[in-house]
Length: 128
Ligand SMILES: [Zn+2]
Image (cartoon, protein in one colour):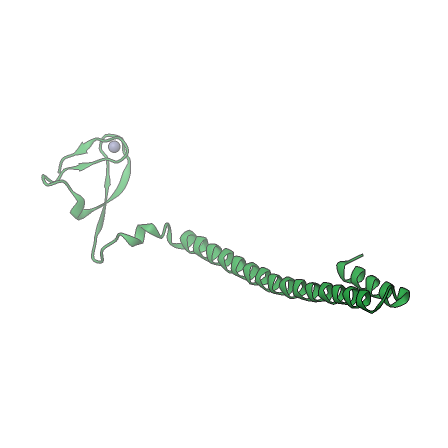
């Protein structure tokens, strides 16, 4: 039996049994009315809660969609962070390490001052 059904049952009892005198009836009727008002307020809160729940679900769905879009973008273009640090106009070169044969890309302006380059694979310093 829900709270509202219990209140209705109580109200039915009150009308059926017609207890006591005038004063007692007033008190009982007042209690039933107060309980009804409480039930109304609880219903209102439940409605607000449900709306917020729906809003949260929408928001969470939207975030998931964003995450999916993000990872499919990263799949197509590589890690997005790689683009963030890049200044426009940077150029890359590729080099094969004579020591280990590892082929790697490097920024031309990231060369050491003497023009040497360190292999990221084996650490060998390639002199030009
Ligand atoms: Zn190497």
